[in-house]
Amino acid sequence: MPKHLYDFFKHLLSGQAQRAIEVPKESYIPVDNSIITEINLPPVEPQIDIEEDQPIADPHWSPVLPTTEFFVTQSEGSSRRIAYTVSGNLDANKVLLCLPGLLETKRSFNVLHAYFLRFSECKVISIDFSGRGESDSLAAHEQYKMSIYLTDIIQFLESKIFVKGDKKVRLTILGTSMGGVLAMYLAQRFKSKIYEIILNDIALTVNWTSLYSLYKSMHNEAGYAEIRDLAHELSVDQRAIADVQLPTHFDLSYRADIWGMNFHDVLEGYKGKVGLIYGGESKICTRRRVKEAIALLRNLNTCEVPGAGHPAPFDLKVCSFIQDEMGVKG
Image (cartoon, rainbow, N blue to C red; front, side, top):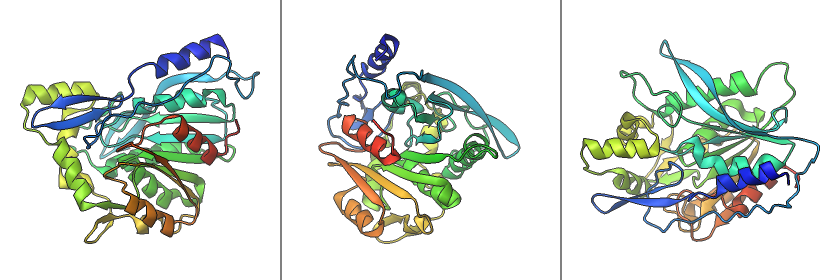
């Protein structure tokens, strides 16, 4: 492997990808490069070791290192900048689009950008939702909600991915937690244009008890200074931290039953592949929900990360699973 790529890999993978910070009321908010999640399990460190002599699949090809760009989206008469990071072969037809979780940023996918740099047949894109990372915050009169994120990604896909005249794109959408839910709605919208969706620790049903656990862990009675510091730590708009805890945040259609929120209908008519990554100790994507998904989805492939909670970390096993699902040759 060329020395500059080796050094870049080591730089991205050398940081602590998962660490926990303690907050009041005995709540824990595990953080993975600006992740906020809900469980009290020990963090699982990614186990990726990039060897210096690991070959690039095509030695005559020079990849584009992760670069941040901006896309302008329009909503309610106003425009906002949506930040995204792109890397790899910009002309490749195999595209991995990464959608973060509830209060994550695109930095949570740094490991994937690093992992796929040596494959010449694909490119990786990760996105910051509004009010996260480098993307613009919503206007003061707007509330953060799922329909806004979904509309932004639809506009991004129609403007940057599914461009008329371009060669056929084989798009895989990887979604972590909330990003996985959005991936399902994108599959409903674009159907055959999406080759596969890969869900990181989110299945077709989310239990009410799991949601209660999630919001309980996010809730704390800290003062303004603590919220301000948390927002800075996560690179998230303070209003987003408050809005995601409101019932109105999830404003997309779904079926509700005694168990929880049900997304079975969202994937009706979608014939593409589905991958499911889940933590062996997850409180969101439980083993019961994994079995349910296996029974309902014929094209489902799964990858368990033993001992992991929510969401699953991008260790070497998970990265290899994503590579295989995309059909990227080693």
